[in-house]
Image (tube, rainbow, N blue to C red; front, side):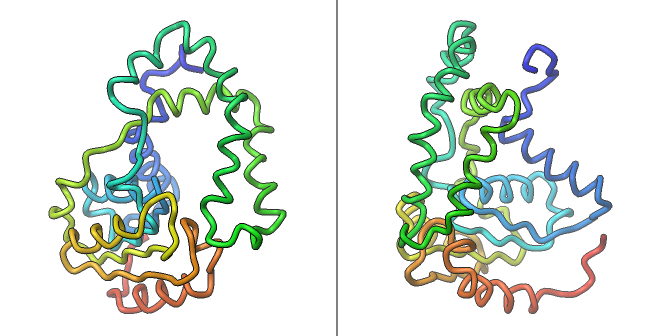
Length: 219
């Protein structure tokens, strides 16, 4: 609960520490990080903070230039006692609208499997999910990554669906150009979640990239 936290676990910085904490717990010294959307930003930030822990990056429709959190001028307002009290109610009221974003994320929403659509509602069955969601919104902000991309010195694959309506294809192409030596793969007839919508094409891009990496990731 927020009154028991030393630091907010929902900030981007905390999510980076969560990645490293998970690797430590599993005894993984170095990994290939795969990040989709906002997860791409977390993967990049983790690499910048812990470069010796990441062998390669696979950035899938990564939200580096578009989206990425609550604007700075709004965050103090979201953390007032009044809005923290109303936050869970706002989260519950907005969930239905937010869950509709799944259709926006697919090139062809008619192909969304029923079990995939149902899975997006599973989180609402967890106790205090609405408070957690509100705290995530209040704490989220976009890490300033665009000006640090030239610090990345590791194999990187940038993947984008050609019909991403959340993170524009142009942003992924720009990202691929900004990271020295990065490879870029554009998957036809795919949206924001190519690993779900176009898994075969996705693996055709990922497999040769991974296979050409030096073997011997320590774990």
